[in-house]
Image (cartoon, rainbow, N blue to C red):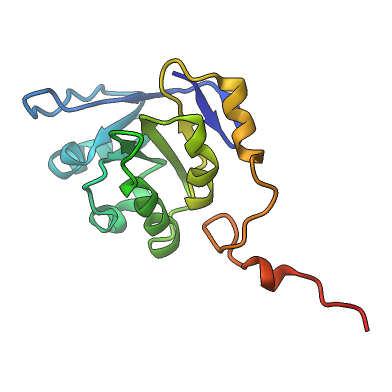
Length: 170
């Protein structure tokens, strides 16, 4: 998979840990940068904070961002999983994390991430995108420039277009 961060193709040092098919928590390495599922965070919070390496959490579309709001200072990254292209709950999670909970760290979209979503994901507050296998990275990079202007406010622009227009000269 290709990782785009801050509109550039980049190397990924993070290891995504996932629960087993039976729901078993993943084993946590002693060092290194890891992204753990919310279920692992709930059970192993203190152990994860004490270990070496940077720490991130992955949220599913059904998870509540408020569940981690009081722990954001321990995190470097939050990954939001899109189970399918049509699952829009991650967009709402991103807006809540950025606007309500003040998250300023890396916000990564993972799962079924395609070129057609990138512009909208960026507008909601995502700054990193783990493209699904088979996506053309060069084409995907162009998605950020698909539209020259947006009318609405969003995480990337707090003032609507009609408020940004320059006043007419007398």
